[in-house]
Length: 356
Image (cartoon, rainbow, N blue to C red; front, side):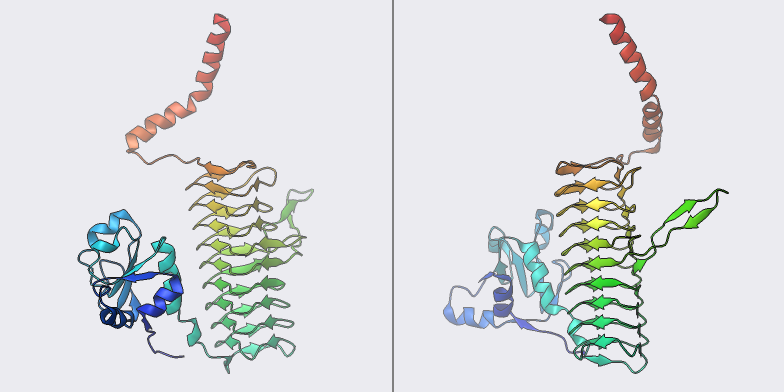
């Protein structure tokens, strides 16, 4: 592992994110050359950045912090550039540009290729010579680990699973048998991929008997899976996570679920088995999907915080179903009124019938 801190010139960063450089020295050619070679070696917020840090301004609420920032350079819009005391990297979408700049400072390349002496590797497993296998990793029979993949300490990769190129698995991850992880994926600590789904059926005595979970788990390219997230394998067919999907911490995805490409699943979301989520959907924190029949959600749907979806959605849009926090006394009154809605509805219908 290398402990060297990464540094980049403003010219290098500007080229990487597609920014125009403007600032105090832009008026003179010599000054601009000096300015473009200024080094940045870290990232920081506007309020906490120090010399050598790159920051960004991506929202009006942070503008008051701009005048006093100590950052060496700031990524921002053309509208805010005249007010910046530091050199500016001007772009149309500052937050996206900052995300791309942050990738330059990623430390995943500190893992050198090779297999730690304490790792346990099945004799028929295929490990690319450019992969990194950390301490106490267990890799079972039939596993394939592709070039530049990183499997960190204490992780187990189950039989016949595949880890794609440039994917990174953080410490203490459990990958069950028959899991395919695509290219450029990230799996954070504590995640469990491919465990049995919650499949049981009652017998004649009312006792629950297990349904064998025989399917696999297929995860596309460039998927991010958060810490403590559980994605079950399929009961018969595979559970499928599309490419570009981003899954937050502490998410539960049941067996045979299908999530379309480039969808976003935020923290503490729960998806019942066989749920289907379309492409470019967002499920906000604490929301859940479960119904008597498998629920299908079409493309381009946003489910807001703490909303429970029990029926399929076939029209793109934003859907909400949670109540807004208020003082307890008001909440109690509203709850009582809510329980009376059914009786009130019947009374209104009765009155309408009399008036007609």
